[in-house]
Image 1 (cartoon, rainbow over the protein chains, first blue to last red):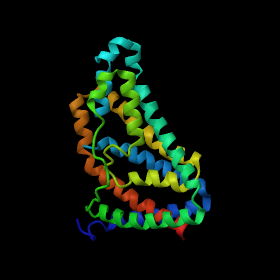
Image 2 (cartoon, each protein chain N blue to C red):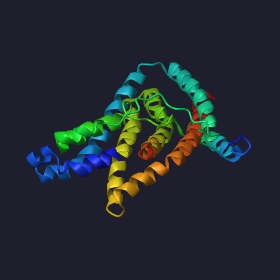
Image 3 (cartoon, chains in turn blue, orange):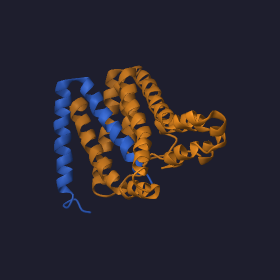
Image 4 (cartoon, chains in turn yellow, purple):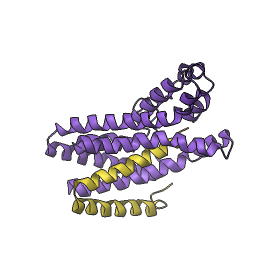
Amino acid sequence: VTLRSQAGPLLAAVCSGAGIGVAVREAGPWAIVLVLVLTAILVGAAQQALP
Amino acid sequence: MNAVYGIANAGVSRGAARWGELTARLTLPLYVLASAGAGVATGAALGAIGGAIPLDGRIAIASGLALAAVAMGVAGVLGRMTTPLQCDRETPREWVDRGPVSWAVRNGVVLGFGATTRIGFVLWYAVGAGALLTGDWVAGALIYGAYGLTRGAGAWVAILATRRYPADRVGLFAMKHHYTALRVTSVHLLMLSIAMLVAVGG
């Protein structure tokens, strides 16, 4: 796995992160809570795949 | 799958014979409720503690953590996964011998809290850090409660799946997707940390 081969996912993550950041900043503090709630759901779901 | 084992065996344990079939059937809902409840309680406590930290301090901590998370997220996307600091252990299988109610509550609480079990993903720390740094007990309860509910409800999904597929196959399906989960959580960690830097640090 090289930086070049992962440029797509990296760029997508950085751009969408920046977009979400701007949206959250405009929407207010409860938008941060919403993002963190969705993150918590993702973590809980991902942990079902723990070996 | 440890939870599935516990739920599947709750009906045949010594305790189940004493408490009856109805109690054994309540194992799964109790387990999910305990997991969600533990998450809500932990998140509320973290949020309340975070409320004691001045806003400037919380923003500074969040920015510092987000910068570190960017580095770990990039490394994760590039296949260099950071092993999180963790206890790396499952809940004891012997708990199932203590009866369905005891098993459901103990196991649910421990998994809903999460910190004393196998964590597996660096992104897990965002749940606790997020609950703490919001500085609000309601927000903390919502964030950590969502984690506890999802972690507990995963067993429900697995139990439903075992009605259609063999239990071994369900377990293997989950474990075979571990690397995918690592990749997804790494991308999400990078995205979340950039979002936090833009939202609170910019």
